[in-house]
Image (tube, rainbow, N blue to C red; front, side, top):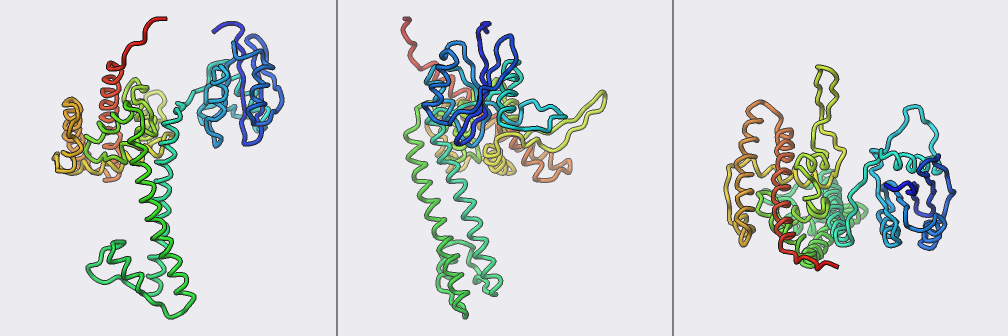
Length: 379
């Protein structure tokens, strides 16, 4: 770093940004508060002497990456900081926007902050769509639960042989008539909400299929290759790529496992080693889909018609990694289950190791595409 580098800490809110700057050889000081507007950000950069020699940071939060993109376009080196990894003094009980900005600037200058991965526009759009579909599934579950409990309170049990939430089940509910008009109105409203949730999911899944077709070739190749793994269909593969980005940004698979929050916590001192539950300090969306996929490995290694169809046209090395994953993870499942571990703990451990095979396939495909990219001519 040059001696003229100035470190800027930004405490960002929807309407305002608290600004502080740390000089190379001086104290961190507050510069006040500016509006969270493009013009105000441009004026701030000009006031600080231009983008050259400036390094800015702010905590990740609900405002997203808009400010990062604005500063990057202006030529300012900017980083988005993981808020849970910002150092906190044990006795500090005063928190204001001004103090937070000063603390960010000071810690940034000291190198004590951990930067987050910032997705590009394509990744961000795909991730928003994937999460919208996940929210729709949760809403569908709640609406079905409310309707089911209403029917249970009214003593209306579905006929024998009718599976829940199938077409026959929905037809049966549609034809129900309750005695009280108020109860019938509530039943009608709950039923319409269930139908609306199903239509919403169908609409989002169609949009997701169209979005996957339009992603960059490198991202699409990773999505296709991950589907060679058992339990990882198109939606799961898309979620992994949308949440993680480039898998090669992790130097080792253990770093990807830590990013998911599926690694055990530890509190060891001296000769005492104590490990606890998983940290959960990671990407919950990634952890959820990987654990769901891990349930597939309780079955014997096998390539069925659906999996064979997903593997058509893929690289032989990718298919070899996927086949190795089936043997390794099923053996791990049987071994841990034989030790008397709870099935949920076993599946979580299998999901953690599945991330290693996901990393291997992703890195392999990304390197292939990197080798295929034409080299730029020298200036």
